[in-house]
Image (cartoon, rainbow, N blue to C red; front, side):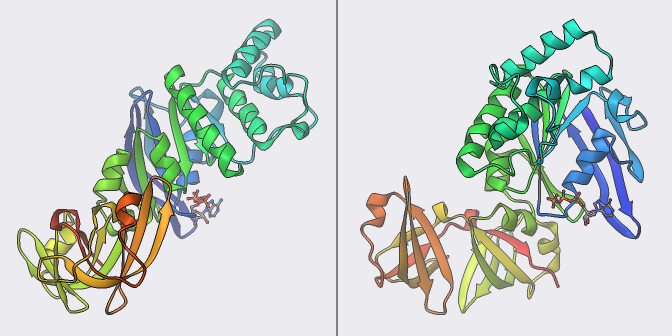
Length: 359
Ligand code: ATP
């Protein structure tokens, strides 16, 4: 297990990491997800030994490793910019680190062959980096990390420079490779979909802090903070003011009395009159062709857009006061609606996640 204990990092007066505590299991695909500047790369660089923490400890299998130089840690790092040597062939690029360590040439040959086979690059040994595609160059960078047989691979936005199609292919390949080799992967990305697809667990980071650490499914279904709910995205967001705080929470938005639930201590302790945000996933929203708003969490509006999104269709409804609520449904259901039609939308109380919106 990798244990990160209260890691703090300051650059001058700026706090880049604020008491990060994390436990990552061996064999886990773990992602650090967050917007630009939240501290993902800094944390990865501290793990790799490329940067010192201001305070805190890092333990691998129960032993402190934060005082070890980078080359003595059981980690290898893969960067977004592949950082290959242009004047070296693919196999010399992969062998470079082993040669520095003066590993026996026969062993180098065996290990380079093995690493190239792992990333599907057999036949490319004598090519130079500039003659390879972006995806192939990233495979070389990955092989260069794997050739050291690290216990843990640290990947800093490794797919960021690839086009969408190649990126999807590499995502599938990375996941297969990681599971097959049983390695621990710590993967940095700002792309929530990528983190969700690849990871066993995801840590959402915001301004140097961890907002939430959970499985992708839990993050999707039960965001624990306003930031996580917004960052994971793809949700309807409604602003309102709390009117009654009980087992559930009632709130008012544009004259509607709505209800939701909150796991957020902040909101439960704030009492009524607080500014709130409600998040509802589009697949939880039902659109009905009668216009009635007598039920809880039912609003009247007009269909203003229908989008076909492959297996699902999105029906967007604008309420009388301009709030937009999106619903995802089967295309056959969506075909029952037309733009301009007056409808009502309804969403369950249990799926209406409320957060305190701050002062
Ligand atoms: P990105 O996705 O853009 O790479 P990130 O989440 O990886 O962002 P970091 O690169 O870890 O963010 O940076 C975290 C914060 O620390 C930023 O505000 C950044 O400006 C600052 N920072 C990082 N490295 C240094 C440095 N060497 N000197 C001063 N400030 C730094």
